[in-house]
Length: 309
Picture 1 (cartoon, rainbow, N blue to C red):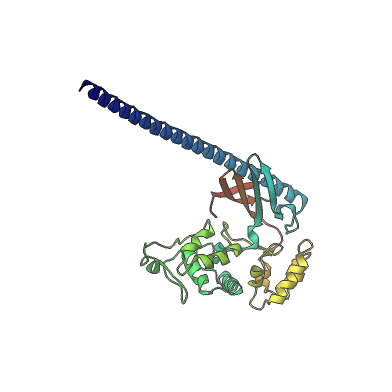
Picture 2: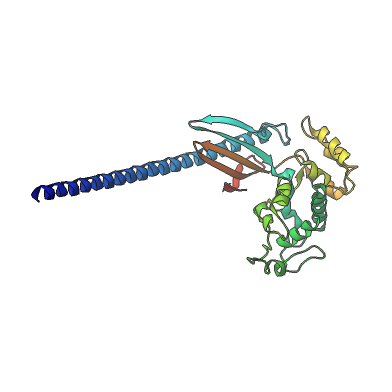
């Protein structure tokens, strides 16, 4: 009996030791896993902070380029150094690349209203022509104008005010003020991702009324300048400016647009958009920065966003 008892006790002790060893292994594995996660989180945060600083450094570099550009030339065109894409530059563990676009080569949606917040009819008609040039429904012009104008009365026949948006799920209201980002157009009645992606490269939301830089304007924006502007007219204009912009805007456009539109055309720019992408290990940071250049060449970031336009 004593021998059986000793054998039984030894068996219990062995099982207990095995359980303790198994528990210790599990605890050690969990601690190692948690430690690995902590290290990884720390590395991701460090890489993200570094990527953001690199992006801001690229912004400072572009500010210097735009400042120097104004000293070298009073006109802006697609042959200048700022208009060339920033090629991928190597970093420790990654790379940085980017591009700059002339926002005054696009249609400024805030031109849809005048200084009193009322709809500007000429700009509305130009936006309608831009939509048609892009193969989109022209009714979005009236919907967009109602989103920006200061009143709450829906325009006829294409307007949309609070009575439309308050019935949606979830309900919301119109902005009734000028926009700081074209991303707000995603909230327009009837707007979807596909339509917005077609429209986005041709519109901008700039403070106040702005002219159009015809040296950098997209073909669709050029075609929107006049209802009689044809595709062949646009192709001729694009070919004419290719060498370094238009030599004489009035001479090139006098027979194509009305005098009022001619006064809204320019060959220089105050607003640019910088897009910088920084990739470090698995961290990817995208900076969008709207840069405003003053008459003396001083350049100021007026809007920054990370990850979205």
